[in-house]
Structures are given as C-alpha cells and as structure tokens.
Image 1 (cartoon, rainbow, N blue to C red):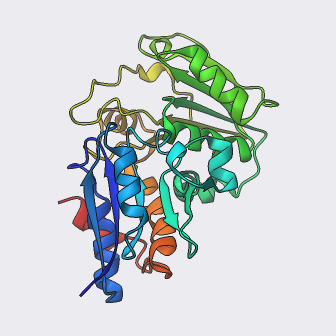
Image 2: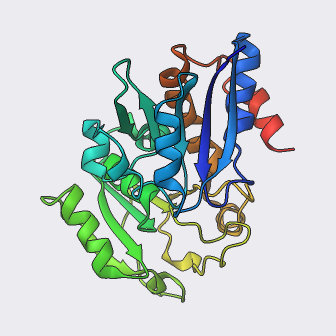
Length: 286
C-alpha cells in the first residue's frame, strides 16, 4: 500500500533533525504519512528531482545545504518570496504536476523575535554572518522589518551583491567576516531605543565545519545573539554570548518554525504546537 511522504535532502544529511521534527508531528496527528532524509549530492540533484516529479506519493521536500540555490533550475516556478531571495528551502508539487519552490526560512527565523519586533525602535541593526541560502532568506526578512544590515562573508563582493539584489534601496553594508575575528575597542553609542541583533547564518561552528572566529567585543550592549546552527545546538558563539550576559536564541527556533510552515504545505494540516514545542525540543536535545 502506498503512503504519502516528504523528505529532506542535502549533502551531508545524516545530522538533519527534520525527520525527528516532522515524524513527531505526524505521530501526534496520527497521519498515514512518512518523512525521511535522503542524501543527495550536487551531481545527483537533477536526477533526484526528476525521479520524484512522477511519484504520486511524494508530497515534496525540504532542502538544506548545499542545494538551496542549485535546485532552482529544476523547478517550474518560484513563489514570490523565494524569487526575491533567490533560494529555496521547500519544494511542493501542485495538482497539475508543477514543482513549486518556496522559502519558509524567513518566517521561521523571525518567529522567536516576535516580542522584540512588536516594540517600536528608533533604530534596528543586524550583523549577519554568512552568504548562503539561509543568509539570503534572513537578510530579506530583516530588511522587511526595517533593519540596517551588516552582512559579513569571506567574499565581501558577494555579500554586497546579495544586499543589492534583495534590498537595493537599503542603507546596508558588506564586510569581510574576518573583521569580526579580532578585538575592537569601538565605543558603541547609546543603544537606548535601539534593537541590535547578531546572527550566525553560516555553517561555521557546526560539527564537522571550521570554527567561527568571532570576538565578543563586536557585540553592542543589549544585543540578541542568534545562531542558526543546530549541531551542536549550544554553539561556542552562544556559550560566549550567554557568559557575557546577552540574550541568546539557538538554531531550533528557526528550524522548528520553518518546518511548521513546510509541514502544512506537505500534509495540508498545521502541526501541533500547543506546548510551545517543549516536548519536541526535549526529543531533539537527546
């Protein structure tokens, strides 16, 4: 008997927590469905999409590194948000067979910041580290919320191009990520009425990746430090920020938030989150 399924694809994929998240919700709702992980290399991406296109049980897939931009040529169209961002983290199939790319990363990223964003601020500034697909979604979401963005990458020209593509009218800045690696004695101005955010949107600090070289002297008073890495969950950046007295947000916030939006697209029902994801977090922390 056939069964509806969705999956997450990437390279590597073994570390993905998405099957645990979606599987938990599927079990809670008693759905006759599955969610699994599928290792797809860059060379195999086109063949993967072609093979799933004609599978009637396939409801779509989430996409993680390094395919968020590479998958776009193999899709039929992008939703408006994904078209602006230039990256996709979710693919679904319409009844006519068309494969649609979208991004739920931005909404998932902003979800734990709602209380802060509900307040009025004189100025909002975000320092965002990384220039990949997730960073593009985060930049778009923050620009929409009125942030001035400092985007840092190993290639400042690439960072500037992202800013120009996503928010060409914004007063944003691109810098080399190495700028943040060493101590600064910069005297931050009065931050009263301002909201500062530091985001690691890169894979640096993830298990198996290079460490993130970041000196906490670059973090202004009252800043919220947000690391989207989920393996390990408590990254060195978050530990340093917490030790220095900053509010921190871990990668499960964005991961669960974006997964909730994708789940509804795949299975046609909202996931159960009435406990604020407390039970799910316990499972994912094991």
